[in-house]
Image 1 (cartoon, helix red, strand yellow):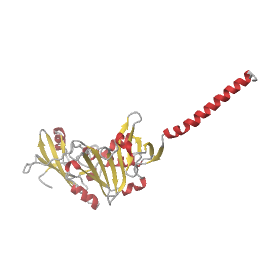
Image 2 (cartoon, rainbow, N blue to C red; image 1 turned 180 degrees about the horizontal axis):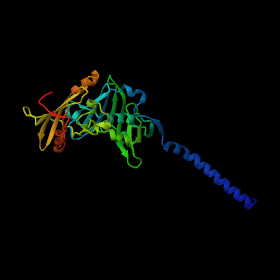
Image 3 (cartoon, one colour; image 1 turned 60 degrees about the vertical axis):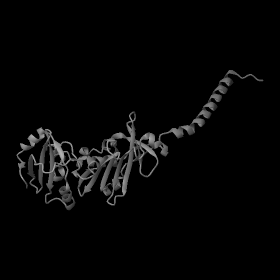
Image 4 (spheres, helix red, strand yellow; image 1 turned 120 degrees about the vertical axis):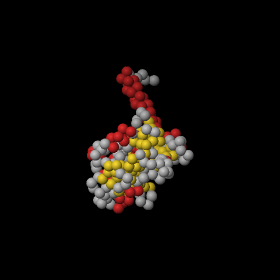
Length: 302
């Protein structure tokens, strides 16, 4: 057998290396394709359908209630939004915080990167996106048909993404967890934070910040025949009127407001404002500050 020269040996060595490398590349290519992260650019709520939304529900697991879930429902009334909670069996209606609702719409319509986590239903339970385990964000139209419905589960602290699925597919996805801020069924989070709600005053957010803030919303009714500690009223100068029945309770106060809309309000807005029957707490400090306002009066009725 002819002996290879040094140069030929080196060339043969490199040739064998190249062949082995090619074999490895071919072997790992399918595995690489299988394990690659799939992603797409999309929105949780189609911006072209946002105008069709007439109500929103946020339903989250809650072991403290018999049903196992707490649900907040936000309802559109012309240009205004109101809310109810399953904790009061939707019997107490409150004005929704315009800024929070607007922020939710903005977040849901934002075109963002969505990553595919799994394609099989078997992944739902570990990811926390089964019906019973998920926080469910639903957008409904006037006929109560689904515009968009998302089931959110656990999150990845490393990537700061939350797992979710849609109502139409079995695929599990993950997305930036900034949407998590709105997966709350806390009615005090969604309700207008001011004692004079923006829906009544028509004031913008900056102007409203000068108003006193309410405390937590309450799902209680005063004992029958219990006299009010005080009744306050305010005329906002635009035809809108507010009346506040106030009851002292354990060192703080329970406030039950009622409103009359001004003439500039449309029929849907007027109907909503006059249907509000919520109640909330205020501290003794807030109560004293309220009494000192020059624009508020003590009345028996208006």
